[in-house]
Length: 363
Image (cartoon, rainbow, N blue to C red; front, top):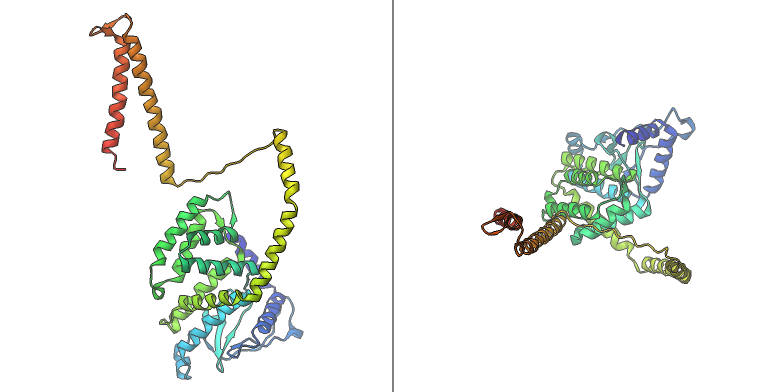
């Protein structure tokens, strides 16, 4: 899966017409931002094998020595860099997926983005789900985060929702109590990827590009302004976007769409009920139940059923042995039929086994 994605991205990067189109789109989306720049593209000289653009003289974003010598405030540069990157992700849905120091320069007071060969895209739905995930993290709502993961992910096989719920809850327990300044975004990303791997969940291309980009950004910040808390900036910016998107007009539009969708579905209910009733009358009704239980509950139920079955065995042995003992069946031991005595011994042995197992078990 990783090799397939790398090959696809490599082919995209080798087509300079694609990179030129990305450069033009990026410039158009960010033309109103005073502190952001992109190289000028010379489209007339550009084709799929050759890309001609302006040469950028500035300093690399992690060149502390020269930036400080020129009087730049590294903390301001770091804050603006992260804030603009989150703008790319959450507002544009079109972001630089390879923001390492060689691709970001500072020139004449502007952060200049280079090399648009690897760009990530997020749909409106993706960005909405990311907003929900931020809300779920803030509220410590495991169910909401699980809903986001299941909505965004693709599955190699049918997901085990009880297991995914427990794994996500484990992540929240591990990171939810940490101070925001101590959170390592790269570590969280790796932990989340591990959870997805264990649950056989494949995240869409745009989300893997985002994870890569955010990890690069954290590395850049560690070089130029380690005192800046990237997670704090990300959370504040994304929370603001979520609040902005919940304006009255947006909610009204969303409510109108939901009302239309509900009415449209409601129109089909009578015919659907009729089909169900006809199927029931013809004996074609089937009910499928898919029950999910945690490992601990599953083990408890299995033990309970086993003990009930053992109890029935003991009861059957005692009753049958008692009936045999009322007869004159031979051979006899201590004046009672040997078969009955043997049944009593087996029943006693089973009872002692269950009793001792219960005593020495720590659960």
